[in-house]
Image (cartoon, rainbow, N blue to C red; front, side, top):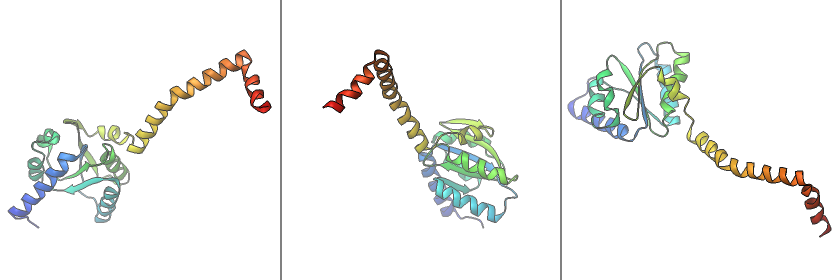
Length: 174
């Protein structure tokens, strides 16, 4: 179904809004993908904070103008599926990588992150990025490590000097 001018303007405005807020973009070839596979991918995309859309390349090139994804304009050829990560940078990469495992027709074509155009092989790198929760857990572990190491050193010094036994007996008498 062909879009009229106002519908095209709405699509470009919607994509421009998403592109302005997105962390990363993955474009993939989808020709030969079944309706069931696309429906499952769209459902998973909604759950994982990925904006997934099949749009004409000319509309996408207009929408990304003025954003950090402007670098992809010259690489947009053929029928492409666009996945914008809106919540965390690696979400689109994980989505495309997951569905490409079971669908040989879905092939990543390009990746764009922080104003850089990267080849399709970088989907694996993008997919390997930790989620927000994983990153926060790593940060908490790094912040807690100095206190843990300090406690171990104090205990080792106390044990070495024999103070560990005295400290344990003192509260029992009081």
